[in-house]
Length: 100
Image (tube, rainbow, N blue to C red; front, side, top):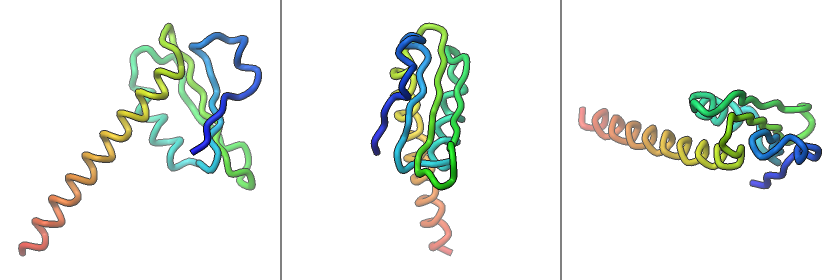
């Protein structure tokens, strides 16, 4: 996954950034937004897919004091934990179902 910052964000300080994700869309954007919006130090978090023909997503984070990049990294770590838990629960339930 290739991630860059949107040009022009340098003037807004490290707590406000828009990241551009190549080859990503609503699947990652919505899941990551739902995780990050729960953080107390986040003022705003949202994403857009500029155009359906463009295979990229813009992801915006604005926080009180924490650098946006740190919040993004924490969001990915927490999303990974949620995915691992979901897989564990699913596999457990499949085993239980197959015992019947």
